[in-house]
Length: 286
Ligand SMILES: [Zn+2]
Image (cartoon, rainbow, N blue to C red; front, side):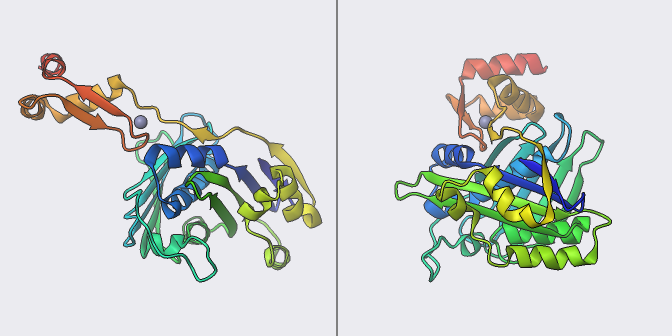
């Protein structure tokens, strides 16, 4: 859900993403902390993808840390579709002293990169050092450093004991150019004691109610509601094209083995190619 607040000074997004975060956790067989990290990154990618304003555009959020997760990749497009993975879905870390999942420790220190593919020759790429590895805070840092947009970002995933995702969601509050200096202080005061988004969702709050809690004192209007979901656009034809791009020599080397299996990292689907399949691709290649 997208809204404008404080007479156009604040741009707001609220997302509920339980289904897509749960789908990602199921596909990748994630540990609790990996489910939380991936769910947060995918929720952010869903919001960021929708801001691109064009169905053809897409963005890639890449978080490379030195923690046990090894890295997270999340891709979002202008239709609210996301896909993504973590390098080590089974990674485990000790819980924080407050009992919460320690996403920051699982991510570690490193870099956050955002690449926007706007259909131009080159993608727009911005990168910042990770502050905490908690993802929301790192993204807010990215928006300020890379896009000069002061942002308050919250991302939350509640993982159940059976490792399914119980609640997931997030919000972005961004100050637009021309905002008054005092709006920053008012906004900071407003969210100072704001509960975690996962807690609000667990209480049964809707995106409308979250938005009301966030922006009621500023005045706001909801401008758009869009569906978001997990979706991978891989198929056999695409995988064949990737094989062809490797060149005849590489394919010939592969086809000396028996059947080969190519795995899509995003949705974990396996594509099997027999020696005969590869020979047919090879013939199309030359
Ligand atoms: Zn796929």
